[in-house]
Image 1 (tube, rainbow, N blue to C red):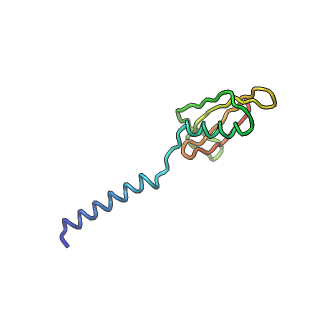
Image 2 (cartoon, rainbow, N blue to C red):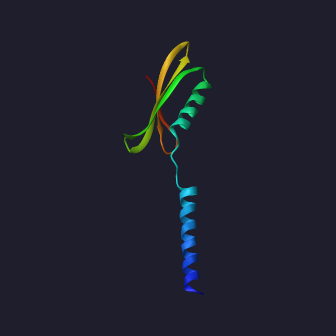
Image 3 (cartoon, rainbow, N blue to C red):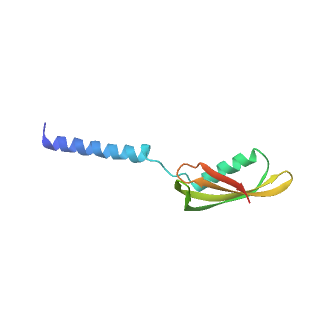
Length: 103
């Protein structure tokens, strides 16, 4: 085997491995807009939603052993005949809702 062919094969394999890692295996952050739509859809199952918002700038969040980047947002919904304001915190990398609370 020619050393040039070996080097070219090694380089091609490394490039393919790098591409697979970054495109398929690397975790991608979930967009704030997608998270907001998920939260709104969940709230709409229980009644009408009047308004919603989300801060698209990720913020650090630390509570006990949890230290992660999050999105902060809110929903105004009609519950029990009244407008109620809820705020939520969602993990920016997975989209998981960490907390929802009535304000």
